Length: 264
Image 1: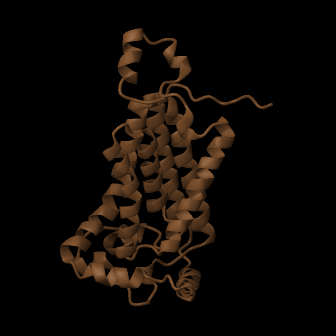
Image 2: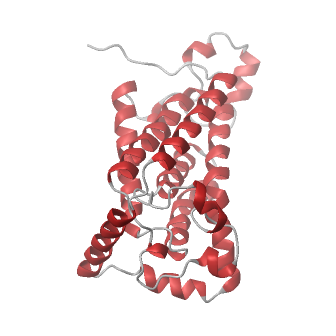
């Protein structure tokens, strides 16, 4: 029987270096994939026609409806550009500080999810709705805001056809589930669940993704959870709040202070 891998106390500089290296590699690989415009458009045609045949092609109506409310769509542009990173980093910091025993496994879920997303970017280049030619509004271009590296000046340094799967959904759902399962206050847990739901509305309203891209993001997240389960023989959120190896070295008062107000 394989020996179980147990999360140890996370080390700050190692984690910062790992996150920095991982994001650099993610950006490098994501943007190094050849921008196959013709194939990406063909995939967009396939996705859009599939949604139409299923009667669920609602993205264009949502995009036009929300775009008519200027303050709302401008806010969504900035939401799309910023919260994707800010919330994910904030949740990682919170995990590191308040749930060190669960940090390594939870972080592994996120990293595996992102790794599988790169496979999708490579093998299924997809033109986002705003570039697909079906009458969608590119809300960043129309309202002259910065809201996506794939619009405006940022387009020259970003792969515009890395729409499937949506890591906005993969990462936001990881954040939401982490908050829901580990936060103590009910209203915070509720906000955790609302975050990926709001993100889904944003990615559709801004015409950056089809809702099927969101399905792809959730599929990658599912693979991340399953892979981590195989590695650690336990679901990511089932570990004790503080690693057992750390508890034996902590003074009693310090252990009590760290654990106060949190569940195992």
